[in-house]
Amino acid sequence: MSSLLLLGLIGFVGFLCQWFSHRVKLPAILFLLIAGILLGPVFSILDPNALFGDLLFPYISLSVAVILFEGALTLKRSELNEIGRPVRRMVTVGVAVNGSLMTLATHYLMGLSWELSALFGAIMVVTGPTVIMPMLRTVRPKPKIADVLRWEGIVIDPIGALIAVLVFEWIVVQQSTAEISEIFYVFGGTVLVGLVVGLVAGYLFGLLLRNHFIPERLQNFGSLAAVCLVFALSDSLMHESGLLAVTVMGMLLANMRDVHIDSILEFKEDLTVVFVSALFIVLAARLDVAGFVALGWSALLLLIVMQFIARPLKVAVSFLRSDFTWRERALVAWIGPRGIVAAAVSAVFALRLEDLGVVGAEKLVPLAFMIIIGTVVFQSLTARPVARLLKVALPKTHGVLIVGANPLSIAIAKAFERAEVDTIICDTNWDQLRNARISGIKTYYGNPSSDHGLMHLNTSTYGYMMGLSNHFEYNLTQASSFREEFGARNVFVLPPNQSSERFKRHVSSAKNSGRILWEEGTAYTKLKKRLNDGEQIRITDLSDAYSYAEWRQDNESALMLFALKPNGDILFNTTEGRFIVESGYKLFYLSNKPDRANKPERLEQSSNA
Image (cartoon, rainbow, N blue to C red):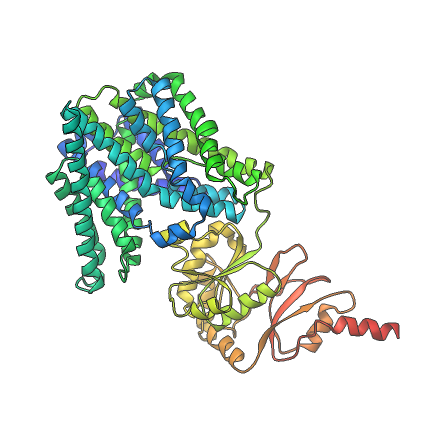
């Protein structure tokens, strides 16, 4: 194949892997590695060394720099204070415990030098949200467990990468000089240059953003250009300091006052998907099958040490004196797959160390990839059964995720909460969420279907999605995103505010996105007017003494919204036709008449009389 065709193939195969990952709810890294191995060692279609030539190492290095910068943007000091003692321990004391045990195991099982073993141990402390989040959506553990695992993956990315970079620089310095004083001098200089360049670049770029010197439409491009320049500049001033510089730059930007990086972070998340997809296909294509075989049974023993010794011990130390039960701690100890940062950083370090002639450096990449594949496959297959065995998996979810913050959605969320149905309202407008927050309703500020939403919004407790914003097309977009996760029959949108003929066309086009709620005359503007006119969402309990037919006679003008079954399932009234309700259901409806929930009691009293 020509070089042009190979580049196009890498991009398209990367997309297919990401798409398939989304469909089956497994980490994309697994399919990217398999695709790369098939294209490279198995069928010999892709040879990255021949395709990229001298640009291979700069390409991999810049890709890793962007990945580390994006991870560092998520490390906010305020959030670190809010995540709770167990997570803080996991990313501090737990990192030390896990890294030390993996260092010892790597040295004695694999025969690597102490320096390389320490580097591998540092690399293996990183989990990462890109492998944790798909697994959590499949496992669906209790919310407190999901929150711990999610925050560990987000916070530990930049911390683990920073530790690995420092260990790597120490090894490189040792290779260039044997004098201990000079080792400390060069290492200190490397760290100092990385810190200074990262801090200065981050502060200056933050000032540009804070004072709006960069137009909003150029902020994303400017941040990418700045990261590439800072990495190259720092590496030119002091070799191997570039990764430290971009990590420090990202951390500083994330914690500067009055610097809004939400759009940059979202852009970097999207860009990271592109970089990661291409990078891992290229890295996997460079793997030597003989290198995997040469690792032998010792590598399998190392995987067992990580899964059954290092991870459980880390969790045991981190969760001392916490309110987590032993069952909850056990599941946290079971789930800890390695992912993107571990593979990318190990590849960059291995290439550099091989050039320096470090003995054993060629084992880093196949060993890291074997650990990644092993943890992802093993935990993906076993985590859900283990969660059920430990009785910490959620049953069938009945919560409702609402898109759009407005008087209608807030009224519906309040009605759900009266019936003890877990509810959250999502919106990209901070001001519109204010009333929901004041009412005590759980909220998420951002696009729930974005990468940021996938990482920070725990959807495992929700089983339904309602698009209640005043933008019909936006509701359809969100419905399409959640259709696969919640199921086609559990995703609903408001009808459009259009004429009858256009409404029918909209309904036809919406069938592949979400089910249309209620009826043709219930667009957002009309429902809002009914609320403004004094109508309220009311709840009535049906029973043998007070049937649905009697309720309908009493509430001819009421708009039936949905019904709550005794088992917690919710039946939504849609344009497809009214559902069948029975005794024991709770009816939710919009009406200006008083709530008739106590009528059955009055009927019983009159009957007894």
